[in-house]
Length: 366
Image (tube, rainbow, N blue to C red):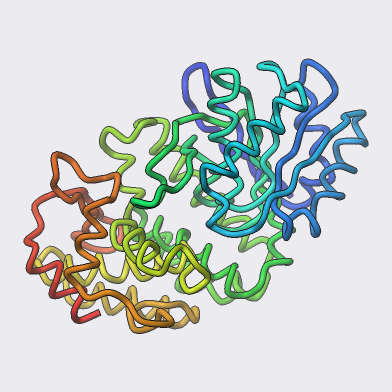
């Protein structure tokens, strides 16, 4: 069973295929993009051990040769040294502008490899093969690529759209429960920012998703990708509406920086905590009802997810220090923090008009 979502960008449109068995069929879907029957693949050590052979077999079945590079797993790989390693290896492989680079992995590999493709020879085509739920519903779609800096997350990068995305939900069965739920933080985000009916659906279907129900997983990925594709088609470079996709991220990125981009807090976990904090802030400012933050936190709790700062292992900086970390967020405009807040579930908006004391109070209560 396959679903297709088209990202309708003039001159750069591409399909996101969602279903099972897509690794085995990779050659069929990638072959029409090729000028020569060869691709290069970059993955991480964990993903490569599980899925690289299947992908290469799927390519080989259609007469496509491949070479592969593996990198260390983890957020620290989104860095200058690993970007240089990628570009040097791609040049060693004599990758040309007409070739295809395949990113096989989660959000870290997708962001890093996409950025390497964006700057190599001033732009080489690439295909996303996301292997985590977070990457399938969010980071593989929309063309944001980049690496982290010591000042913060994703501060160096480029918009570079993929030529194709193959989201094989079958590979999600190899994820640890914590990794799957981290991705679920991004799924919930879509319902919260613009689709109350989807959030209703998730409240009923979330446990089935977590338990491995394949049709439910396909539908959750499809609805998430469709919402992102619609927004990206209208606002590719985040001049307006696309900023809604950052719901929870201003808090999240500060928390990731505070925890050293370590296993103490996965990105999707930070998004979940960030969404809970964004709704708490919205309620404190009188923008939404007091019931909305409670409902958000209740669903995340039901799914076994983090919702509060106290749920994050280890010590965290105080509210003022976290606020200063937020000041490095790439969404700052003319020195002013931009938040995605909500008038209710499914009704988010972007604003810079947020009193500093209210932010500090939410962080202190959280």
